[in-house]
Amino acid sequence: MTRSLHLMLLMGKVVPVPAPALLVDALQSVQITSSSDAASGFQLVFAASKRSVLTEVMLPSGLLDPRTRVVLTAVVAGVPHVLMDGVTTRQDMNPGQTFGSSTLTLTGDDLSLLMDLEHVERCYPRLPPHLRASLVCAGYAQYGIVPLAVPPVISSFPNPDVEVPVQSATDLVYLRALAKDVGHVFFIEPGPVPGASIAYWGPEVRVGLPQPALTVDSGTADNVESLSFGFDGLSHTRYTARFVEPVAKTEQTVPAPDVGLLRPPLALRPAPALREEPLTGQTGRSLADTLLGGLGAAARSADAVTGQGRLDVLRYGHVLRARQLVGVRGAGPTYDGLYYVRSVTHDISRGAYKQSFTLTRDALVSNVPVVVP
Image (tube, rainbow, N blue to C red):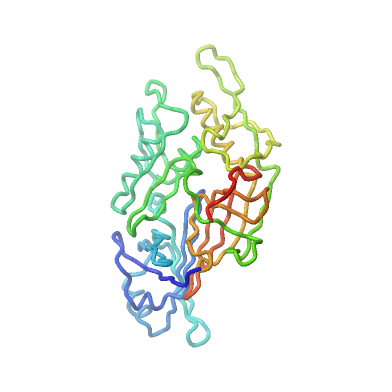
């Protein structure tokens, strides 16, 4: 257990710098949501009296206007964790009805929002998907964004005599569509230092050292306030696609590859695929692209086991991060073991730091004898 908690706030138009002390003093609460399959967002609530510097100077000067860059870093037990690097999109002023109740709320999204502001027409002759993703992300280097693109598990190189990949969308829409086509995800991970971020385009990372375990039903060893699990028997779906062989013009039914190509299983007993559905939108695509499309659809349906919980960071002793693994213990052999942290919501106020989280995995019964305590 730790009692040490500090929050650092940086702001700016392109390069963030420490926020004015008066603004930091007025900060009442922070909420941040991080997810592996959606944009992350934040909300800051400030005390704002009629005669305060915030109301009379900062707001009129445009210091807090939409598209202001915001970097939030929590320091827990002396260890910094960059929680958000984003831009504001909205401000809401509530004058309040009683003395001291006026508030200003700033709402924003992570830096991926900057990739969704302009429609782009661009072509990528001969470039496979991961190189296209790297090229798009490289255009945002001024914001400290570094591309990290992982090649698909099945190679797919466009034949320039047959097709030339064309983008006709915002960069964010295009990156997400590319990722969905091959079973990957796209998100921007803030850090590892304030002002820097990693634009990740690749499969969900379900390997590596897990975060400290979440402990339930273990008396004084418990470090979560609540944690429950569910098993959706209708989640896992088996997909098949129709592929027309380009020379003989014969039609074949192609089953989706096993999701083990993308990621290792997190438990021993996989959820059975009770549904079977055809994979749509594959007309005219190559066999490699069709297989990748089936792999992506299968991966999105595979996580039939979920967990929902809430914890106090000062009791847990760590900041639980989305898009990483975490261990669970105390829930019994069926639900103990490793999970992928799908999303985390951070609720921070003076002297308090709570997190709500969602866990997922593709099977029941732990495949590891113990988890990291």
